[in-house]
Amino acid sequence: METTQPRQKSEFVVFGKDEDGIPDGASVDTEGDFWIAVPGDAQVERRLPDGCLDLAVKTLATYPTVWAIGGENRDQLYITTQSKHLDAMGLADNPDEGALFVAQADYQGLPETPFEPK
Image 1 (cartoon, rainbow, N blue to C red):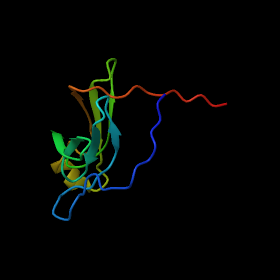
Image 2: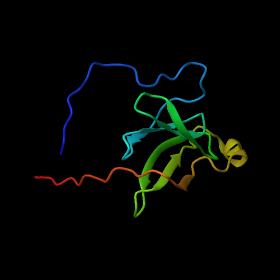
Image 3: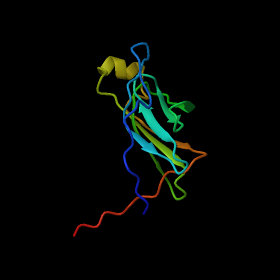
Image 4: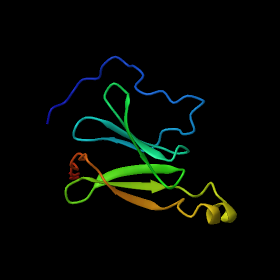
């Protein structure tokens, strides 16, 4: 397995005060692009290595929290969402909050590295 050395610290993506979301669960795909859930903005974003937005996957829920790529070919997006910020009335008005979404992806996730305790 190839290892890389840390480089000089730099900003990758800056979420400003004018944006609805804040970054949450994140990972990297086989092409080296960065995927991140953006709660409050109802989407999961794919960012290129330079930080530019490449793709936004919209969800029916406002607060996606974590995403993972899975499935037999590692090409399905699994997106969890939160509902704890809503009371019973808010949840009734927004029934998709707290749901798990699955979408077919055009990208593959990295294979899992098995953990074998010594």
